Amino acid sequence: MKRLFPIFAILTAALLSYALYAALVGAPTEQTMGEVQRIFYYHVPSAWTAFLLFAINFLASIQYLVGMNPKATRVANWIAGAIAVATVLAAYLLPLPEGVRPSAVATSGIAVVGLYFLIQRFFPEQKVDVLAVTTAEVGVVFCTIVLITGPLWARPVWGIWWTWDVRLTSTLVLWLIYVSYIMLRRFSSSSQTPVLAAALAVFGALDVPLVYFSIWIFRTQHPQPVVGGGGSIDPRMLHTLLINWLAFMCFAILVCWSRYRLEVLTRDAEETAALEAMLEPRSLP
Amino acid sequence: MNFLYAAYAVTWIIHIVYLGTLLRRYTRLRDEMKRLNKTED
Amino acid sequence: MTPSTSSLAAVTLKKDLRLEWRSKDAINAMLFFALLVVVIFSFSFDPTAEESREIAGGLIWVAFLFAAVVALNQTWARELRNDVLDAYRVSPAPPNSLFLAKVLGNFIFVSVLELVMAPLFIVFYNLRALGPSYQLLLVGALGTWALVVNGTFFAAMSLRTRSREVMLPLLLFPISIPAILAMVQATRNILTGEASAQFWIVLLGAYDVVFTIACLLLFETILQAE
Image (tube, rainbow over all chains, first blue to last red; front, side):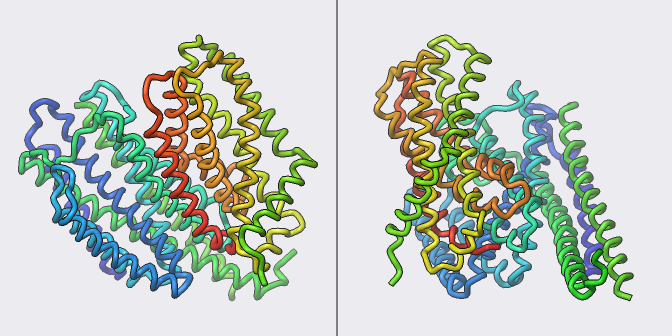
């Protein structure tokens, strides 16, 4: 694993440079917005990466809460399975909003539940909490980038820095929730911090749909999603976007990897320090 | 055009600053470990 | 035989109300705090009757939100003295009865505050509702519950953190954003009479149901965490 890290880092750097070239030179210039549209190649991949990291954080938090009790774990696994089946059924049986393909809904339902079981398989007990810390922190970094590049694009195109639109507001609230999550972790030093943080993550996840619906009824100004929706996009632009996403995902994995390792080492060091304090009472003043 | 460069620059500045904090925490942790290992002997 | 959840909740609630009745700590602090907020807002904006209908919803709820935090911070701090909370933890009483009693207690405190402060708002801002004013009661009740149920939960959570008085608003405000938006918009719509407040009342109701269930499911875990 350790030797894999530098190889992966070099690959990521190469991919990022190629993605930067594609974004600045390779992709055609947009007709109405001009060069500024190229911000999109950094903004959108960062947003997708941030949301994915927050989703992993939510799944890991649930995993941590139910993992304390074997019976709850079993119940949660059954519920997760039922959610996958229900999403697939609903995707093909219920009428969906225009432009949403049933296969997309079904795939994302299965993917989320699959991710849940993957986390369960590879991150047992305390490791799942380390995963939650890691994804929350790196997610906030990516989300910050989304919130800064967004206004930088909006100013020349819309003429305003900020508007209380659905996507902008939900992203901002999500960012606020996760900043408070990190603050809770900072301020709480007891051994039960993971439990408190996991509960907060679950509350945050419940909050997001409510935020979304509450702002949805105002007219939305944000451009409709171009991928998966009904919009059309130049294939070269799509290619650039996907390359950038791949590059940023690799970068995110790299950062998460380092952060994960740091957290594991920190916990080891804390344990050693606690043990030593117990073994050497004479060092007390 | 300036907005474009600003956005790209800001993205990388934030990433580099975060990596910097990680690196600082790593070095601090390594010093801490060294200290712990020393007291063990 | 262990007594039922509701009777245990009633006992705890009665104890809290009696304590509050004798000391009047929380309610006095809240009232004075809210009064200060009202006065400061009033002279920093000095709006006309038309404008105040537009902004009063926001001002009222911001004042109540800040005042509620004052009360919420004291809820559990009281149980820490003499290790009462540890006694709860080892007792076989269902934790949710304790939680419900605390939520109801805070709900009563904040409602009393709102009933006292509402006339003051009307005087300072020359308010007169142009829409159906009976709906304000519904918005008030649902909005207060939304603040108090999560506030009590997060206050229990922040008990175990350093500087917990600061921690509570940091945790509570982000999660409460949709509820606050709904309360403010509903109040504004009722005061101006321009649009129906129905959507926002339904949203508040949904928020209350979702988070009450979440709190009841997770409270035991939080209480046992130490």
